[in-house]
Image (cartoon, rainbow, N blue to C red; front, side, top):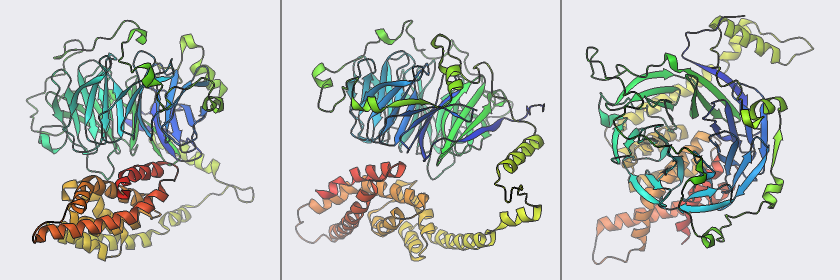
Length: 621
């Protein structure tokens, strides 16, 4: 038997084909780090044991793509929200549907279970947050205040607060007992993707599309740390600018540091003072969820129908000491983080009993029986059609039975083994590939070195020519950009008749909304129409991002200008603005029909176009 390679800090554990169509969401079980739930455009929720290739259980019942999924703390239940706004809760041990909850009017974007009891929170693109009593099958309270989609929800460790983060760049903290907002944090300048409570102290971490991570003191309700340029060279090391920012956050189990997973990297942060302890390269792409167990961090990501899992050995990661970057000298070591139990701020007081005694502000019975349909009977048609199909009986029995002694697979006290030595690992990979290659004439097909190299180089020269031309065009645009005229740069890109150049420029401009001006909209809206009809997913995504930014930033100005009464006298500036607004309105009106047609699509793009359709609704009035 080969000896495990103990020098690796991170490695890929496995890659699986999780669904028959694209994966739309996934979640790890945080308690064990060994269970994985995936939701797909095939309207199914599949349950997996991390590191095992076969699906344990496939859950059906949704009639629309599954957009969000979450385990409860004991990992005995899983909830999934769909594109239609419905929620379904399954009991994994009994292998059956537990509840069907209706009430949201748009896509479910975020979910979280209460840490102790039978409560569940959901956030939607309809901007509402609903608190559900799973036992009574109804919505007990609704929290209003966000103006855009609620992208993340998190209960505090003591179960008394609920934090919500939204595309409107705000974080709101809600008191469950009083049923009202405690405070609001507004320092982020972009949509907030993730929030995470510290396991012990009154601290909250948040990550945003503005490429910063911020830390909030929940006693004084103020920001105490922030990544990115604003902290200077001695602050946290910010994530590199990327076209679509997606990050995950997780505090170490003892709360000594904060892990941040972004594209192909894991960063380890400390605070008070702010510093980055370590940066670990990990090939997980856009990581979608993190879990910590047995001194290992498990990260999972997805692309199309595939899901990949990765492991980082936390014993080989720096969690304290001197910073990676900064002005702090080696002869001035940083103080160690305060040990657990001797922190500078208050710790959460967890109740000794379960949440059956948790006091939560509830709506009146008449409000809960509102026409929105939040109350559903156990014999409803939706629940009859739902099912839990056990695909792997052996793993199902090992993981979910008996109830009194749940055992996760692999056993929770065993970390994932590190990969074999590089040579042996490569050999086993090559052997596997040869085994699964289709045979011709019943004889294995083995390519020689020269043939294999020729296959690899096929199309290489053509690609080099394309990239050389693209690089030359971008150099031309850069020379114009240097003069500070963004519109001229964009007009030059448009004149090249190459959508890839337009996409490159838009991906930069989209990251800096302050660069957008009204005359820029008149130039780019015709290009957005082409991008939305492109066969390339990245082009379509860039077009959607630009259109969303234009609608949010300029529609109020366009509407006010066009509906304002005529001015007295001659106002040239006002007339020019009126002409630009009129041109933008006409272009947006043309785009609205295209967006309506695209909104009927199934999956991630359909969800994006539905959001655009909501933003463009005022055009019809």
